[in-house]
Image 1 (cartoon, helix red, strand yellow):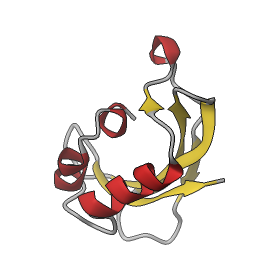
Image 2: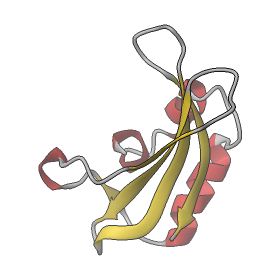
Image 3: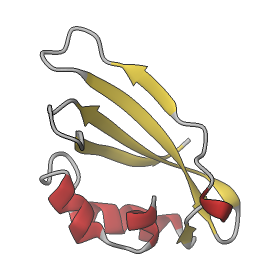
Length: 101
């Protein structure tokens, strides 16, 4: 959420190794929504929609992260990611989509 609010699309693409969404696609999705993304007030961790992916070769979860905007507070935008067990401190991530629910 913090990286999206800071428009660090290059950093997100680097972290996700460009799997599924490029920095240009992320920037376009945010720009087309037309509101200013912000970090939730008080760094609140919003309710996440987490589903364990079954029948995967590695441990992985599908995670929906609600996004906040300056104009709306909690918005209709959701960041959809896949978190993948990597055996390291940080999990690998694939940014699947930024969509309107």
